[in-house]
Image 1 (cartoon, rainbow, N blue to C red):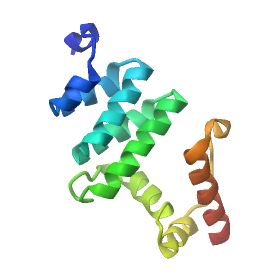
Image 2 (image 1 turned 60 degrees about the horizontal axis):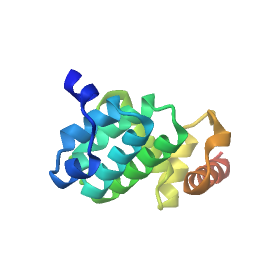
Image 3 (image 1 turned 30 degrees about the vertical axis):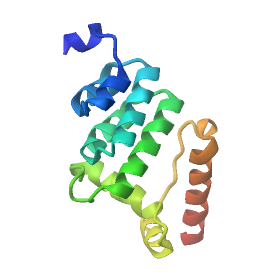
Length: 147
């Protein structure tokens, strides 16, 4: 979409106009600041159908601040969206299901999910901070208890 690269994005306007497609396109092509603002706008709009696009952008995102914002947006959307509405497909679905079970407030779900793991691999662990760091610490603690 060449027009997207040439356009000076106005995230607020897209959000006000419920332009989900435009915000999703920014997740793919915008600067880190724009990608972060687009993820925040999708979260504020409560667009559950954007979860697959957020998941896809999370896999390719290299900026830790943007990754944290995308994860926060996904978490908020998962809480407010019917699971069948935004269900990812294939391998992404298995990963999302595992993350959801490991982050479950129901300890039994987390323990069952963790028992199937053999290794925990953390890339760029030093970049996790704030709420995300606390979530990772809780996840590690739950996994260690289950092993």
